[in-house]
Length: 211
Ligand code: MLT
Image (cartoon, rainbow, N blue to C red; front, side, top):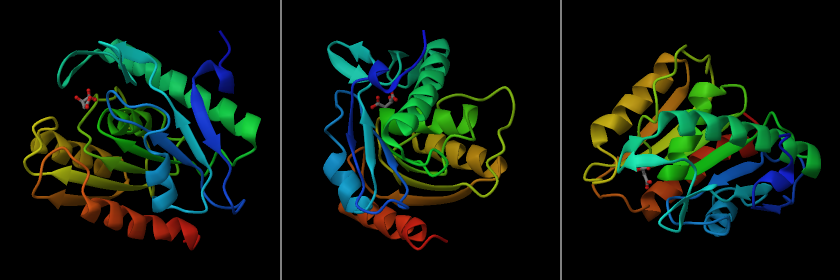
């Protein structure tokens, strides 16, 4: 079936400055398309915001892909949902007229994991990514070419959901593929901290200066 912008429930908010990079907002488990809008506005005020809802329901909670247990992913489903999300971004770019080459993902937890999967399986879709509390989602068959793609990661040393070694491993995997990774460690757990949000806002300034 052909993917259109209507294929996935979402919110789109136009940006106030046409050249600004659009943000692809990807919520955590149990969230929805409204969850990260105010965060996106704070991180990058001029950006257009594209915020889809995860297509999978786990006990009524939306997610972006199925899991077999906490931290154990259904890899076939993850691959398929990643392809679907890439097709959705292309369709939304055509429907709303934003530049498909400038999209920056901003994901939290489950949303950050599918954003990481997108970097690994569709390295041409994202111009950059902010991954809050992500882990290795899968190991791709072929190393992607992510040369020069900037990635910000925020991680918690005591995150019970995201084992710190798997956040570290994701950073290494992205770096080996050529991505320019900034990994910020926080002493806390799975919750997003004001310090991470501030660091990501500062980091995103590079796109606003066009550098
Ligand atoms: C995931 O399933 O992506 C991770 O366990 C994180 C989460 O769902 O919150």
